[in-house]
Length: 213
Ligand code: BG6
Ligand code: MG
Image (cartoon, rainbow, N blue to C red; front, side, top):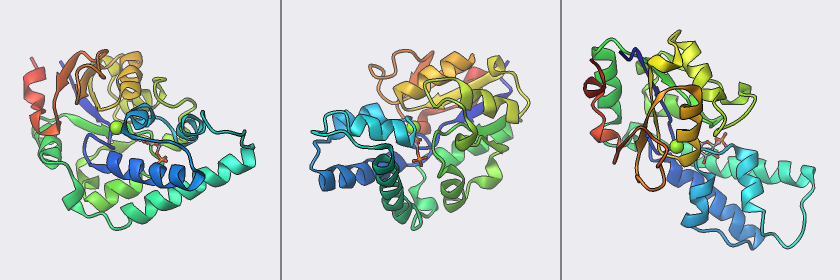
């Protein structure tokens, strides 16, 4: 049976996927590049630099590494300005209850977010005490859809990946957790998350007990 639950953050526990989008959109507007919610779907779960590459793929000119570094830093500044002001109200409905339900069942909880801002955001959301381990996105060799971050999260709570449930709202995240060997619960749209083992519409629908035997 399952011994741990590995959570994605942006779009699963918090509505921060919207804040990432707002920050990228501001940058795209400043650069005069087209960017919308549909294109943003490809950025979900994807690292900062890989996201920037997608944003720039239709740009009329190439950008140097130094320019790209500056643009990524600019986007991160916009994002951090937003999350500095975040309070526990930004938790999605049912997120805290889901973590509490895991703890009540004796399950380990870990964060497997691609975001280097995850520790700051977890702190602002006030759910640090409900997390046994936060995997360090900056230490992952490869970002989602590679399995690294979910493997690190499983290791952090000393549970084999096959004994972990994983929750993610992004196609790249579902593939990452799948590749790690977890049982993957996609949170959101079944068409986008087709590779998941199970789908729930949102975190409020997550009942960890129903996966245990
Ligand atoms: C993921 C988000 O959780 O983190 C992505 O879904 C984001 O949108 C990625 O790009 C990296 O975040 P950060 O905070 O390290 O730029
Ligand atoms: Mg996500």
